[in-house]
Image (cartoon, rainbow, N blue to C red; front, side, top):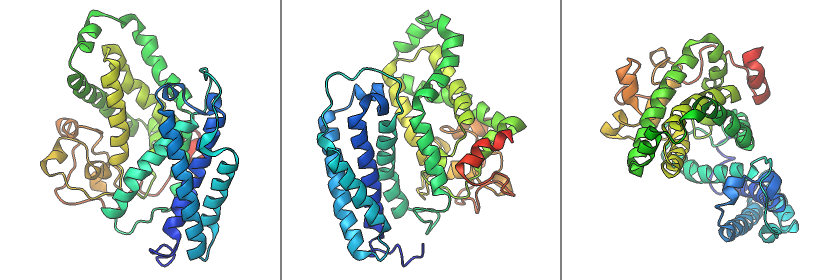
Length: 362
């Protein structure tokens, strides 16, 4: 798209908002119709349903209004047409008032609700941040290969049930004998904030060496190379992960947390923090953190890990704690510089979700 196509007042912004909210709103209405199939049982137990219905209703109104505005302002009617069409389909299907009859039993599920909520919240937070404080200048919202990364985001969310099983199974298999042991009771009896900090240290130490192995072992690198194949960095780029990479990393990183027996509330807080932090360090934002950038992982720190420049290759393996890279000799964090280019020299990884999925075994 040219700069003229996306300028303020051209109907592009309203069209993007309309199309996005219209599609997500339609998906949310589908979740109300088929909760056993499309929604996640653990999330269903904590949903404030009245608030969720109100959110769907407001989203559909905004989608329709912005869609009409885009149709009026924009010569190309595609975005506005998509938004208005999906909004009307959602409204005709019952909208936010779809009744849910009785108790919804636990069942095999797709997890569409998790995808919709996570995408909505992350986009609501990071899209404005990247527009207001961009590091890479005029990088477009829908930059090259954004659909590939959206496909990875979608696949990792709708497969949440399978991923949870594969992630938890190794820990449960090897450490089931340790359940309710004296040291687990001691760990769980600690103050919540202390458990939270301990989980960050334990998990990042484990993740550092797993991550480093993915760079050293040729077979593992084939899977991890997909994550490094992105030549653009933003909040969605971090989703580009092969399922084998996800399963191995999460399973091994979660095992010590399971074995040590951290209590559920600090663990939930840790998982929320990890989810947002993983997105943040890939984001296209130019924030400066002063001396704190040596304490906690920042976008500048992790962008150097994705650098195509020789000085940044195989550096900064930690996710949360740069001190681990300093300790093991893999730290690279120039004072005020960012990488000039991202990706892998020679671009060996093919384009597109399907070709990348089969790339490591071809």
